[in-house]
Length: 119
Length: 111
Image (cartoon, rainbow over all chains, first blue to last red; front, side, top):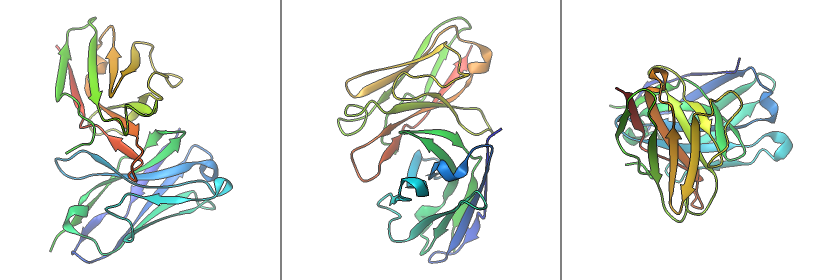
């Protein structure tokens, strides 16, 4: 069974930092392209960024609203995906989902972890 | 505001067929055959139902089918069943720097 379990969410002040983790199991993580997707309260889903597998270059791409502030990384030895979020803004408040991609679609989703940016 | 437009709700009786639309632009739905559909039950992770417009993953019922015309993709559920009651959202690859866009979601009710 495939499992993606996010953790690390919480309440943080504007300008602060937070690191999200996603523990993956049930598939060969090192071969997978992984992404983060978020959904703000009452809003639609928004793609945050993607990291390719190391065997395919490990390229990382980010959505414009988070580029320069967020960093995606992976540890294939522990099957874990990370999202380092710096200089957080109130508009970054959202449920953050870890996803596993294949081709141009998402095959698996996690349950999400909630990030609230508020003073 | 979502990049792809879906109706807020669609309903049907058991056994009927319903269709959910997903309207984008010439930069996403109209440009690529990389539209996918997901089913989300409350409290559960979304499940992939259709990818690349009309392909079904292994294990997904053939009652679910997808199509596309111009800038609009569609998901059809035939032989509607109570277990199909859920939220459905679409996604498309896009030529913009965002890479992927999503629909606003459609709540399917089985009457």
